[in-house]
Amino acid sequence: MAINLVFYAILVVAYFFAVLRWLNEPLARLFRQNLAHYAMVSVMLILGQGLLLDIVTSSLLRLGKWLTDRSGN
Amino acid sequence: MFFPIAEITVNPLFLAFIGFVIGVLGGFFGVGGGFLAGPLMFMLGVPMNFVVGTDLTHIAGKSVVAARRHWTLGHVDFRLGLLMSIGTVPGVELGAQIIEGLKQAYAVDQVIGGFYVILLLSIGTFMAWEGWQAVCRRQTSNDKPARGQRIPRVIRAVHLPPTIRLPTSGIECISVWTILIFGLVVGLLAGMLGVGGGFLRMPALIYLMGVPTHVAIGTDLFEIIFSAGYGTVTHALKGNVDIMMALVMHTGAAIGAQFGALSTVHFSGPRIRLGFSLLPFIGAVLMFNKLI
Image 1 (cartoon, each protein chain N blue to C red):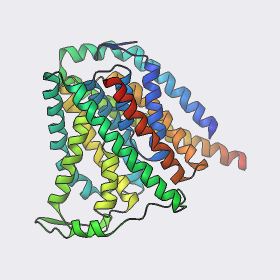
Image 2 (image 1 turned 90 degrees about the vertical axis):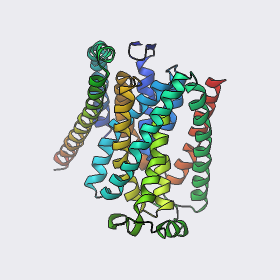
Image 3 (image 1 turned 60 degrees about the vertical axis):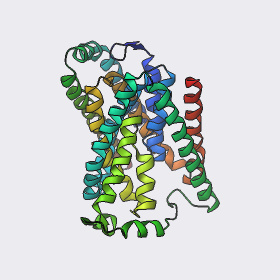
Image 4 (image 1 turned 120 degrees about the vertical axis):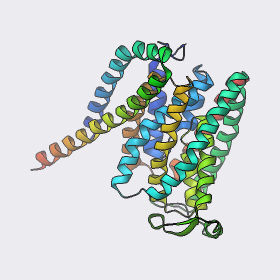
């Protein structure tokens, strides 16, 4: 479980830097140009990120369970 | 790092750390943590209107995942949640309009900051009292506080039509108006302070309406999707959301939630609740210090 958590943390930190690198300027431009589009994109991004991180978490938990079962057998 | 939307320079690792702390709170303690994130963001120098909008946005991201889990466990009363949302959405809009008015009067920091201090002191006092009671009763983490049935009986006795039956929550008959007014008040707080409102909705569902604790938690999270989702849209349209800050905080929260959930195995519930009651007081002190 602890190894899963560390792996998960590494994945999320890598994602964190990717988001900062690629999205900062385009989103600021959209904020200045069209607030309605910015609002829609904001909702989609935060909900999408929530679901993405949930899928990653669930997959890692399943993987951990599978590895534990395998080592038990 | 410069965040061009809020036009402020903040270390993103600090933001991720705030997210992490409130993620741990969520996983460990079952609260959204907006009441703590707000003062901490304000401490970093984020303008209050961006604190409110951005906090709501990151809460929306968290609530979807949490509500999905509770839905699979059958802990969501959809009728109650949807009805509350009908009251909550106008409440959020009203709160957002108040922020706009205060923004134009250049008083948003002082008024909302002052309101925050009062609210944090109230939450801290309630949590300390509830935690102390639970420790005295020597309850374990699985035991929930005893629910008085007198208040729910009085509230359910108000049969102002239309009324509704909520079998998932074990409610035979309740006025729709009660639920709508309740949603409106929580929505107003959410729109004004950028909090999910779980700290208010949860105890009210349990102690005022008599909803079972696990259904109250699931329904609360389901309802936050609407209040925080609508709050995100309306505050973004008013230019109060820095989505980059919200995304950064949310990544920290995702890690923190896993740590929090893992840690609950090693600690007992009442002592955790008593310990965490210090956090709102710390938040109040930080906010007060920034205001003066």
